[in-house]
Length: 283
Ligand code: PMP
Image 1 (spheres, rainbow, N blue to C red):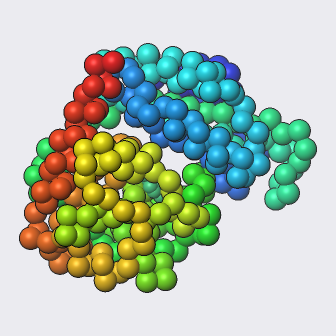
Image 2 (image 1 turned 135 degrees about the horizontal axis):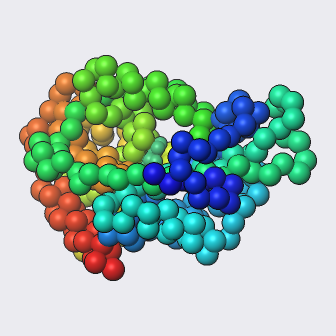
């Protein structure tokens, strides 16, 4: 497959990055993951806006304008036309001459992007839901930045996998914030609730889309903190992400959520989401 590296499209096995790249040595960079359906990049503008926000937050100059990004990503997606894809892009602070935490002036960011086929979500997921465990949030205080420095997320996800769970739901100071790689919603008495944006969670593009679709379809929702007790007492628990879409959590820490099956509001939102995605796919 073809990848993009620093202005060039080339076969992935010919793409090379220096060992002095600050992404490699420090995890000094940010990234995005953007699905493409039927060759159409899904929610591209908000993803590029979040990329720009992440870059500004870590003081890396944005190497491209929005139209330039769009051109690069569309060309990559065009290489694998015919399948649903997920585009990964990352920008690091660049290659330094000697290892030094402080950033040298005049670094040129390293820009990498690739696109890979993704399958349709497994229908069994909508039918039975997933298992999650709760874990203490061991990450930093700037989780709104989509940094490539993912060691805590890696360790949390691995702990979930070893516990036979698909995802970890993170708790900080008695509140549930998000998943290790997804955002959190609960349903209580017909009301959809998700934690407000802030430094302790990633402002998910799928999260925003679910809120937008709820508003459009008259589903009552509220942005508000979710206590650990509210999480455990919820009628429904969902996790959202660009590649996994909306996942109903039916078992949390070995205990059934609600009646242990995907709930009615999930089924409604899942249908609305699927329609929206299909409309994008058909252009
Ligand atoms: N939170 C975290 C920590 C994530 O890694 C992700 C996935 N990138 C999300 C939430 C979901 O964000 P999005 O809907 O933009 O994919």
